[in-house]
Image 1 (tube, rainbow, N blue to C red):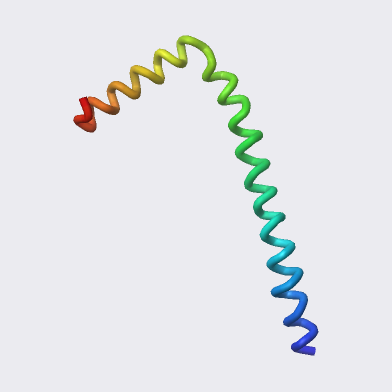
Image 2 (image 1 turned 90 degrees about the horizontal axis):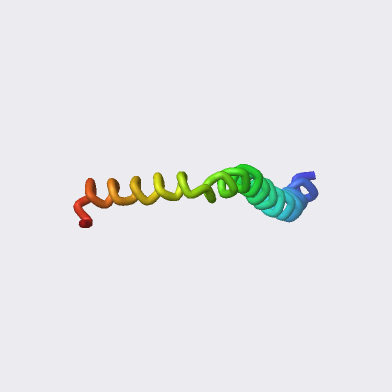
Length: 63
């Protein structure tokens, strides 16, 4: 009994969980990032991004 239970757990358990979890984590970022990336293409957003980057560098003392 214990042998038959131990075989499927490490074999099918880990094998089924790893690709399943990877697929889930890969699908979620793609869905959430695509609208954000499309929205950030506007020139106004690019100006804000560059200004924020400059402020961040100034605060860090990089400039």
